[in-house]
Image 1: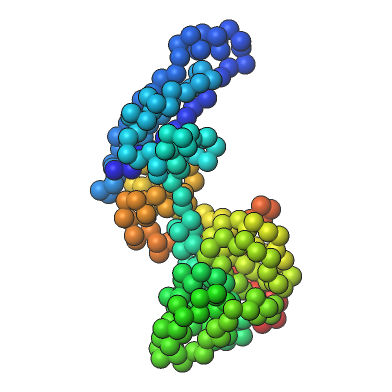
Image 2 (image 1 turned 30 degrees about the horizontal axis):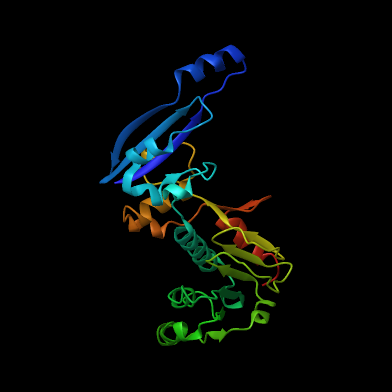
Length: 276
């Protein structure tokens, strides 16, 4: 069973209504929902007073306090063992799925220069997948031994010769770069490159960098999702905690950064328009 927490701030423009609400105090309600075999316990707090009784909530939430599904705007008391569920793995899959969609749809596939930036070596399985559509692939990783089998598979299955390196300088001539994990270091990226990643980088990068995604949730699951949560975050909880692994194959319909968005089609048009 999944557990989600929503906190509604009950406030009015009229001072006397706020006074009456504070006299009423905070209230907690629990609703149980289910869809496609997944059960969600949704705990909603109507907050009328400044102070929340976290010990009371702890007695209700129980063992799921350390992977609680909730908005990142909620400040959880870490001293009581509360921790928000983290969705980074699922976001990484979305970036890889969109990458595969883009390179499979590009007309001039053989001319596309693609790089997978994976310092930890967590995503070697993607190399054989990408090599079905692109012959110019560089895998930049600090753990090349984790990629040896994937490189051999790409050669055996698709005749691809993957360039395996630890040098970040190999990113300088790449058209499309994918970094499934969050980028935490400066990288020598071309100014006209496209980078797809699982989370907003902690450093400034050249080119177009997209790190957030949108898609339509499968039927029924959207009825479970608390309204304040994104499709990505809630689907990550379904994928990771409720073992709905089919969600890991979702291809985003749109990717975003802080100022712009792209669809798979517009990404293809942008890359192809650079004269590949």
